[in-house]
Image 1 (cartoon, rainbow, N blue to C red):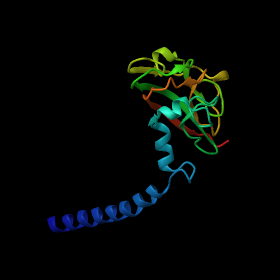
Image 2 (cartoon, rainbow, N blue to C red):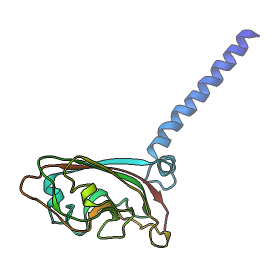
Image 3 (tube, rainbow, N blue to C red):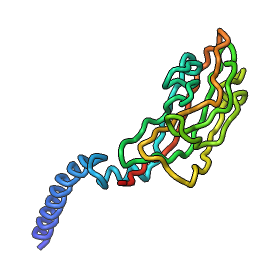
Image 4 (tube, one colour):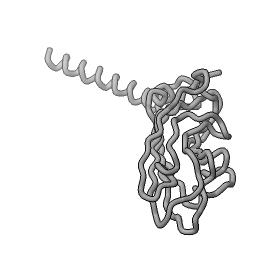
Length: 185
């Protein structure tokens, strides 16, 4: 009787493992390309983190994609069709070197392409324009009508361009937390 029970348990366990090993790789293959797949459902519940370093040239540069351009510096790229980014927070770290950046205004996280501000602001003197290392947190404000923008990235923007006094060499690191929602619209 004991041998039959042992054989039954081993056979059952083997069958379960066989089914499990065939199912898990198939589930792992499902992802963002399959709407509603297990990976997609899990990712929407996760807070995503990204760290971006902005060089001295990109702090004062006024070309598209640079911080002193009207649209700012890209922190998170647009997530794709039928998706929206929920901004959670950002930490702006100035690693000061040699001299302070001139000019400049308030710094905030905005929707890409000159979109609305998603965070409160920090002054240049308390962030990127400071004459010492600085650490500032940017927290979300309620977007207009509580709306999220579809397929739109997040940028760090300054209300006035930063200028190079000639010797400023500091870099900025931004640590941003966000979620990506698939809405299917």
